[in-house]
Image: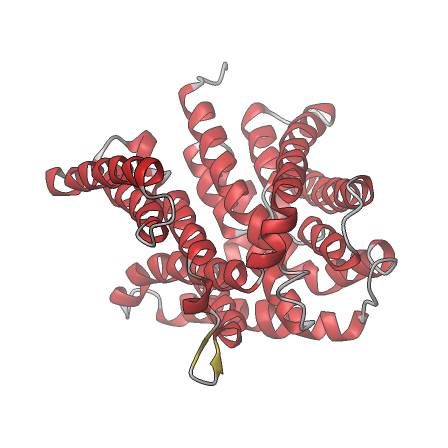
Length: 359
């Protein structure tokens, strides 16, 4: 672990160098590399510390990716004549395949064992977040395509990260996995329907086109992953171990490309979009938790529902934006909301981990 901690010192040195440059040479091009270096050093360094800080490693990598793309967008738009945005959907398919390899038929059978918790989680997730999204979109008076992106994030199911956060929070992990799995399988119908009902006022929503896009991008890879888990689990151990890392790298690349593509728009409306992300995410946690309480769920399940409602699959929303040909506008909200959800999810999970659940 000691070698990993060396990166904390590298991060500190980079931070001090940044301060010096900001004071004496604020126009220096080195600043664009020092900021990502600070986050990257922290991301690696915290892996050598206590368990509490380890969970922030992925979030710090996301910040490193976003800052690199904001300062140097030219590296992440195209290589030669190849547009890097073409990689987004294939990467999401790989991530969803990885999600599928972690699922088994028993995960889906849990619906029959705990239908109340799953039903409450899904209803709250697909009602609270889209409605909060449309309220925020109208309140902040965003441009139509940016507003549609906010609604799209809210209309998306929970992501794989919510399962990790539920595990860290000592919540009901089985319920978390089940809500994520069922919500994702329902998304080809529910997400386009919610978008048609709520976001069609902003941009034209093609229901069947969006539905097929989600099936290709999400459902088919998950089914292939489940089949892989059913028939080949344990036979390719290197792939079993590699898939979580591959998924995390894939998410970081997707966010980097989207950030680079929408950099100019982010610079003009970034602060408002961040405020919207904070409000959207916070209300998801609060209303999800107390919604579970209202329906008589136990503490572990309330924590799970709060995390599932508050954290959406921003990767899926990004892929849909790519399919619509609006990555630099509709795709901006997923690019901003995604990193923020990882930050707050990690913080909330670690807070709950230290808070003992009363019998």
